[in-house]
Image (tube, rainbow, N blue to C red; front, side, top):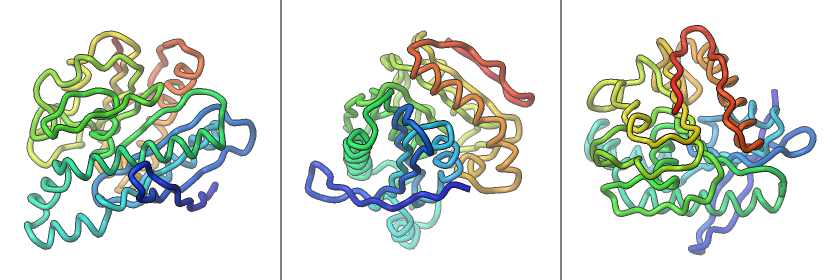
Length: 262
């Protein structure tokens, strides 16, 4: 099993980003930057970091100190789990910090790997980070730079406290959205997570809905997460191959995965 190494790199605002790096064993096909969810650390998406490095991608997971475990714990202590989580995931400064981390991670990774495209992937609050970076309109007043060639959103959010209706209409670059039939948000049903896909214009935008997959499965834990990962990883690999090859070849999904494209 591939293990990563820790790296501390400067951000443009003078602070530092903490990264966990999974290096490809051979030639580098591209750069993948991973953004975990609220309260997660750099280990949360290690399943994805290990897999992408095996596919030949230099993969960098961001620890996001300002919206990590300690930050969530402080908010939960003050307002309870639901309100604490909502406060963190709707905090504009936390997203500003995440985008600073993403810029620092991208600059550092490009110094290590000059080949191929760069992709940003994220889970939960990390998926919101992905959407904001890709150009989704939001209620927080945070602007992304659209600095990547493609995007992957695991457990994306629909309209609500972060995104208004119609937030995703101007996203043009390739994007893969993944959710599951047990991937419920704090308020509402899992079906809200497919709203971004419905709003997006055509342009190599893919949606995968995994039967039985929970919110925590996509973070890399919870009952049956290994089975869920085995269904999702081939889609991610094909998506990355497409971004690298400037094409949009539609894959055949595994059984138990509802797949849609536009």
